[in-house]
Length: 507
Image 1 (cartoon, rainbow, N blue to C red):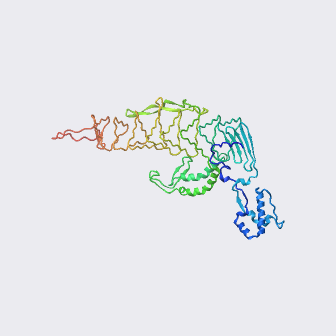
Image 2: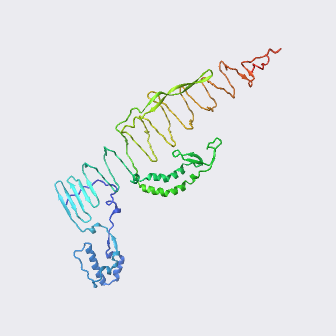
Image 3: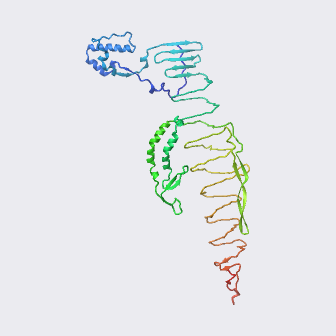
């Protein structure tokens, strides 16, 4: 007998047909007569002649199972009457084989021993095996249940052509040390049912689901609107406020919102059928106890991706008053021009595309994104930036940075305590009106108004020169002119001048 092979390392959870008890053989054979209670009852009611015949039948069954040394002789009084005719119910008694050794009909083993190792052939029926064993313990074992390979030291493969490996069931690969895979060509990792790549399952599913999505996207009240991606127009059923806004108006419920559940029930059958064609699984999970490095290309292309023109655009700097008119003074500001200098680089791209969602979560180390070129983050839905402090800066090596904020309709800035604008020149330009709603407005320097100054309250001057005017000042509803103001003579006996004169030249 050859030495027993060294047992291979731990196997995956189960191997179909080997360790899965559900796939064990289910074999049946004829029951022995003595194992059934109904058969025992029959024996008690028969005579000695029938007992003798049953004994002969038992000997015949023992012969068929290869457990009798000499075939017994079966003699019936009526030789034309067969066993099946006398006992037609015998085939109804079945049992499951509890041990595979009941079917062993052949036992044989051949061994070829050498100084380098051995080869063993086992020919036991149902247990056929061929094993090659090296003197070090390495072995290759072929059995009815599978093939096992044990390498006590290193195992190497060198395939000069192509290599194909197909596993019908699950596949498990374990490395208890480091693992490295090098591919000098493209490396492609695909997970999912092949139908995803051969059938238009995506398009079919989206086509069925679009009615549900349209119903969900609509507002609960029928105050109208437009879809941000499809430009779908939603109906209006109600009355807006006096200024035309939805807020403060009265609108009826959107009937599409009330029918969402009915649409989902209607579409569920077809969606379930398409999802069934998609199959199960298809997820890729990357788990690591420490770090993940994702790198494309051997280095970073850090050449210029654009230029900043320091005096690229002219904007309003301030207004100077000349001859009573405001004259605009302009100043050049920087403009950045993006240049496509990286699209021709044949390496270094990383592309992540998600059909529905991308979720990223980082711990206390934070998130850092740095680019030598442009960075664009855009969304057709709401884009939210938040944090304990939000800093937005435009800065370059040549101090030519710029920040631009553009909105189609509205820009709203709200602070719980303070808003500060700090710059040598600040321009507020409104085509219609600028409104300041405040208990007090303070100007620490001069206030120059090129238009009319209308004051509904009082004008109080605390300066040394008071109020000085190049033009006339008229009081009393335009009746008394300060510039052409004259009095008559002195009133007799009082010393006071007469009342101001009225008429031409007084007003």
